[in-house]
Length: 524
Image 1: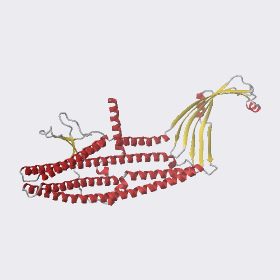
Image 2: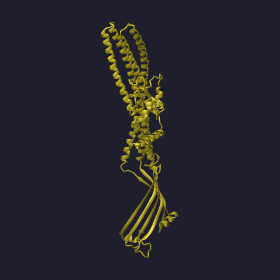
Image 3: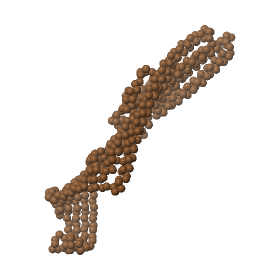
Image 4: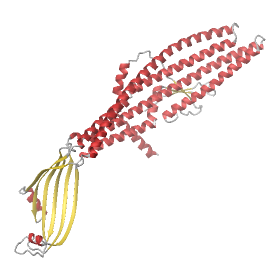
């Protein structure tokens, strides 16, 4: 981003007057958006929430699993065991079990697994009934390949329950995005308010400069008349007192000016004024002037904008939807757990793994099962029923919060509209007063030169002009601030400045910010 500013200095007065660093409202706003660290932190928080939302899709990511088990077992057979093993008095086995499979969760809540199991069986069981007592171990390989399917039919079943986590995470991401928009709006609003406050301090300082100049002129006139014996010394002393009073007020205005500059620099995260070799530090000078639009504000239009653009209202809507999703999940959790379980596969047996696999692949020895499993809490599902009541109350709370936010927005909109209208009327009144006092001051200054009035009368009129000018400048600034408040509440502040942003644009901005941060760290 390139910020264009002007530095002006009079070549004949460089040694006496510092140059002016001119800054427009648009340039200052862009500078704040580029530097403000609070806004940058909120940008990163939004990116964090976006990644968390993307991470929830990992629940449906297929998982590959594999295991190897070594079994060694030796025992003395009882009578029943000896009978089943053709009189073998002892049993000894050394087995290796290899198991692998791919498992995944389906959007319906079902878990499906495609697996392969190879059992390396090595034991002393004789397969020959004529030689039941075996001294050597017999080794065989057993294979099973098949699929298992487990579908919840009541509790934990259905698309809405399974996808609830994804929906909640997506809503969290949307809330984070709206929080970024809210922070962006607050940052722009505060930056422009700081800019207009500096304008007022700048104008106030200018008014006091002119007031001091008038007082100096009156003092010079009074001193000249006193020295010529045409005026009283008391008149000259009164003019000196008026000049001292104005110089004191000017110093107060200068301090207010520096405070306003400091507030603008704090918003921008650093100094706004560059150093120039051979010149004094430039004096910051804002170039934009607040004006009255004289355009009536429609409550219906701004109220409609608030339901579409106000971040607080949109966040309330998302929280209400989240509670609706949680309530749906809570209703599902109070149901009995009834699961459909099914499995189908093929068996194989051989003296080598290859032989065993060939037998299974021939599909001559299928194996399947299907059944239902029912689990019911015996005490009435205490935990989930209480959670259901809690979620019902949370939904009602979210609804009341949204209604309260809507009423608060309506009240603030109404207040902001009336404030802007009142300040607009004040501007018109102040302009009339300022025009009258300017004409009156010119008249009184001419009469002073003609000796028809004294300096005290001129200073009285000038004081009235000073007050009316300050009132006009303050009314203009307050009017602009009331419009800022109106745009902030209605949510149209970003749209009116072409600063509104989409999620994809924010993603790109975040990526650019992170790239710049990494390059800066590498250079450091």
